[in-house]
Image (cartoon, rainbow, N blue to C red; front, side, top):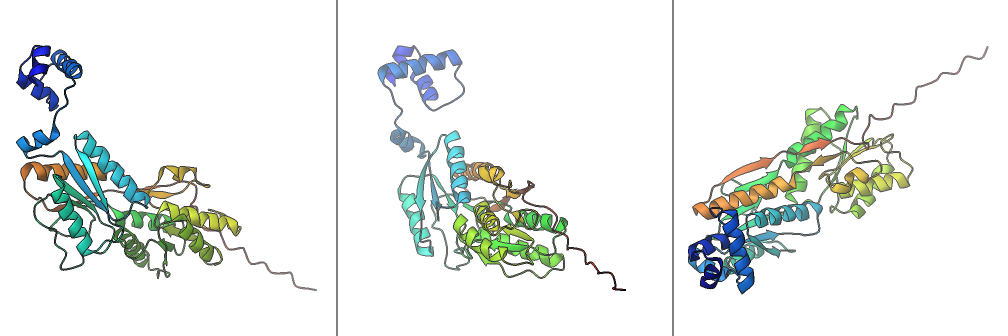
Length: 339
C-alpha cells in the first residue's frame, strides 16, 4: 500500500479508500491510484481486511434442489444482487433435506467465514417443533410460511394460483383441473391450496389434483390422462415445464389448445412465449426476490440484529394464446317428422 501511495503521489488513506470502493475520491485521483496498483501488482487482502473489520464479504446459500427452474432463477438473482454489493456466495445444496442436515449446513457455513445465510426452503421442515437455527449468523428465509421468528422474502404463490384459476373461470370454464407439484414442496402446496380455494369460492367442487415432480415428463404423463377425458376443458399446471409437457400430450392425442382445452402455467420462464401456442402463465419476479433477500440480509449484518417479518413480492398473470373460452356444446338438431 505504501508503494502504491508513493507511486501515485497520494496518502495511504487514499489508497485504502480506493481499494475499499469508497466514493469520496475524485475520478482523476482514483484512476491514478488504480494505475499504480496495476503497476506494482497490488491486490487487496480480503483475509486481512476481514480481521480488521470483522466482515468476510461472503454470504452462504442453502438450497434443497438445483433442478427446478424457480430455484435456479432465485439463486441467480441472489448471486447477482450479492455481487452488486461486492459479496461472494458460498452454495450448499441439500438433496436430502432434514432438520439435521439443514442445521448441519448452517453450522458449516458459520465455520466457513460467511457473514449471513439465505435458505431457499423446498420441504416441510419448518413444521417441525424441533427445527431451530443455531445462533450466530443473520439469516433470511425464502418461504412465506416460515413464521414470525424469521426474516422472510417470497413471491406471492397463493395469489398467482388464484389469478391463474380465476382467469380460466372468467373465460367461462366450468371447472379447472390442476397438475400440482410434489406434495413435499411448500410452493406447490400453496398453489394447490389457492387453486382449490378459488374454485370453492366460485361454488365449484375441485377435482382430484394430479401430482408431478416439476418436470416436462411428469406434465406429459399427467397430460395424457387429462387429454383422454371429455369433461376437461381447462388445466392449470403448477409450473411452465409441466404445462409444456401437458400441451405436448394434448397435441399428441389430437386435442386442440386452446380450442378444446386451455392451459395455464406458472413461473413465466423465458421460453414460455415460444411454446406453441405461446403459454398463458403467472410471472414471478425472481430478480426482486433476490434483491430483497440480499438487502434484508445485509441490513441484519450491519445492524447485528434480526428483523423478523415477511415481505411478499407480487405475481401477475401474463395472458398469451394457450387460453380461450371453452368449446360450445354442439346444438341439438331434430329431424323433421315423416309425413
